[in-house]
Structures are given as structure tokens and as C-alpha cells.
Image (cartoon, rainbow, N blue to C red; front, side, top):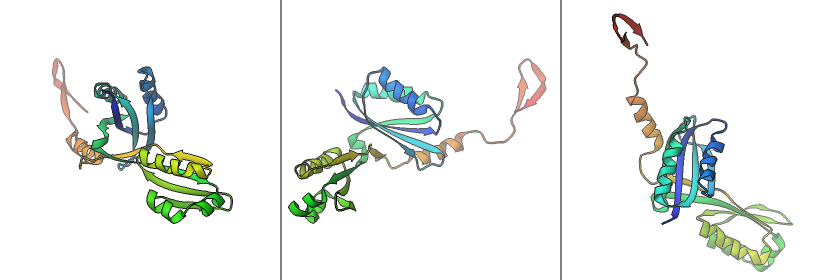
Length: 195
């Protein structure tokens, strides 16, 4: 059964990687509901947060396919119960309508919004939350002449306590160090080379 999944991909920051990852979705005719890219907590590592509606089997295969890209370090997929997530929304409304017909303080308090720009001709409110929460404020503001509305892509953190940077540290510790390794040529036991 299809449900909403968030795919988190840790990558090196290389040109063209976004296109290659997006192509994997389009080839499979999977619509991306939300896409966010940003630096991660580990220096030099970027993070993709991709939201799709699909079956778990398809998402699992897709995550494995994404990990095959050379620049991809790790891809995780989670359902909404396994992550903490938010979206940011901005709303532009006519200042005179809002000031005359709505108790602005009550509106802001009820929807966790704050005014970020107040001009004579318009006011811009900002709020964050789940999509249902940001959509509610659209419904409330629509009768007052909502001029413009924009919502960001999802940002999400996996609830699991161990962050990816810890896993990177563990990986670095498991890899061979810089010490010199002595090996023998096959079939030439007396000749030795250094790597």
C-alpha cells in the first residue's frame, strides 16, 4: 500500500548529481512531492530530503539504486512516524483588510505565525509546521484577500539518536590508515612493492 516516505540522502557536493537522482524518479514514474538540498552537520557533506508517496518495497529499491551513485554516501528512507519534520510557509495579505477585519494577535497566536514584513499595502506572515497546519492558515486568510502563498520543501530529522556524522566517524575508524603496506607480486615472492 502506498504511503508517504521521506528519503534522506547524504552526498558529496557534485554538479549534476541532483539531475541523476531526479532521473531515477522520473524513469520509474514516481512524483516527487517535496525536494530539499542543504549542507549537513558534517563538513563537506550535503543532504537531500525527498518526499514521495509510494510502497515500501519500491522505496527500498529506489534507496539502494540511489546509493549506487559514486558521490552518494548513504540513503535512508523513513515513514512519518520515524522522523521529525516541518515546512515553512509565507503568506502575503492586504494590510488594510487584516487590520480592519481580523484580530491579528489572535490569528498569530492560534496558528503559531509571526509577522515578518508589515507595509501599508501588504503584510507577510510566516509559520512552520506540517502541511495540514500551513494549509489551515491559507483557508483562514483566503477570505481576506490572500495575495500570495509559498511553502518550502520539507526539512526532516530522523528520530534515531545516532546522527550520520557519527556513522561517518565509525567508517573512518574502520578504514585503513596512511601506514605503508608491503605486498608481494603474484608469482614473484622475492620482489616486494610498497603501496
